[in-house]
Amino acid sequence: TMSTTIQLMSNFDVDRIATSHSADRCKRNSFKIFIRTLVAAFSLSSPYLPHLTCEMVRYSLQNNFYGVESSVAFAGFAFFNIVMKNDYAEAKYWANIALEILNQWPPSSVTVRVNWMVYGLIIVWFVPLQETKRRLLETYQLGMKIGSFSTSMYPLCFCSRIALLEGENLSVLHQSNSRDLKTMTKYNLHCAKLSVLDMVMIDELRGIDSNTFSMFNGSFGNDEKDIIIDAQLKGDNYLLGYAYQRRFFSSFWAGDY
Image 1 (cartoon, rainbow, N blue to C red):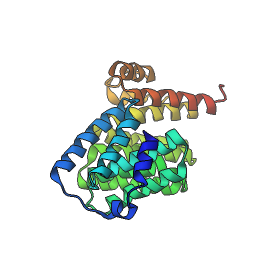
Image 2 (cartoon, one colour):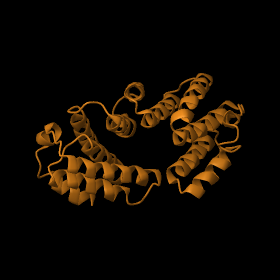
Image 3 (cartoon, one colour):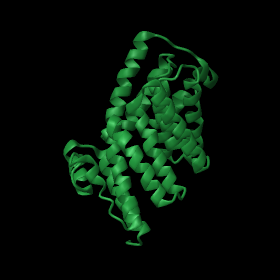
């Protein structure tokens, strides 16, 4: 599917893709349905996610639709060039196309989602971590300004991860995460659970138990195992994978391997 989509893309004028406006209501509504399906597939880590993304790109090209919603498809396609083909140059190319499409439209929840995908998953491989964190923070602030509260929590969540990777003091990081966690709990419980897992890992690295779960009065369970069990019951493969990834990092940094 990736190869077929790439071949189809080669027949289109990139400048036209990046600068064309399309306000066709029917096509925009179709893409909104695509996006909702894509978000659900992402949360489940569905094996059909790459196929769905390619289908969105092909729909956009074959129907001459380059509305703001189509930027989600191009950003997703860019990401899968890294994951499935290890082609970082191609990923960066299509990520920039997604950003150029966004620039033709007023800021919206789609802007927040695509900026988070592009800067947090793709451009992070090409620029310093400080630049990535700055871009993600700007995306979070934009989302809060325009009222896209739930989606804004993803770039906020990523900011703390970037801070850890760039060597932020663990005590300072714990304090900032505690503050951000309250915001996430208010607007996006899924991101809050991801952040709780980060807090558990930071506690392990610090050798301190700050009793993070007590902040939620039992609504998230009593420990990391409860989050994992809940993710298994709900089929939340993204959260489940993230939990095991964090366990791997903790063990690696502790020399337990």
